[in-house]
Amino acid sequence: MKPFRLTKLDRVLSADGELQPVVAKARELRTVAGVVHGFLSADLARCTRVGNLKDGKLTLFADHSAAAAKLQLLAPALIRVLQDGHFQVNSVSVRVQPNGPRSAPQQRQKTVYFSTHALESLRALHARMAPSPARDALAKMLRRHGGLRKD
Image (cartoon, rainbow, N blue to C red; front, top):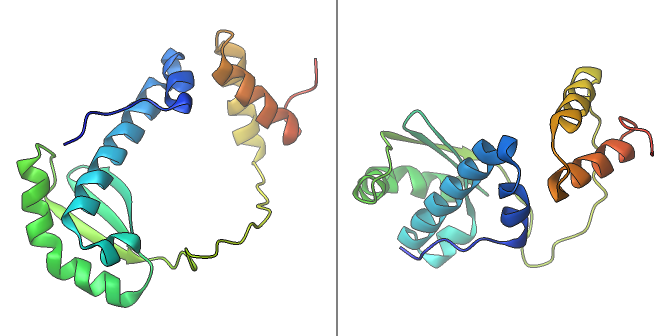
């Protein structure tokens, strides 16, 4: 397994103590994805994404049903490979979630709406955070969604 390299975003997020659990989970999933994609054929890896690893259950997303069927067949061997890599995996769940053509990605404007409760929680988190690039990014997002006034 390759040693983990911190990206710029990882370094920014790692600087904030409250975000440590999120950063740790992202690192774990990135490492699991590396093992999964290393195990699969190149064609199958291109249409497979790691969703989550929780309570010993690995969730994989396949772009189409043929890939999902192949992943189901490979699940027992994949579990053994992951366990050999010291991951606590007991089962694999495969879901079909079309991701669209990867060769020509189209840029779509995503519209995100936060609930009042979510905005309040994010504002409270922002208020508790020490000055940092992560806090600045959260402030920018909150301003964009009407959850924080410009200072």
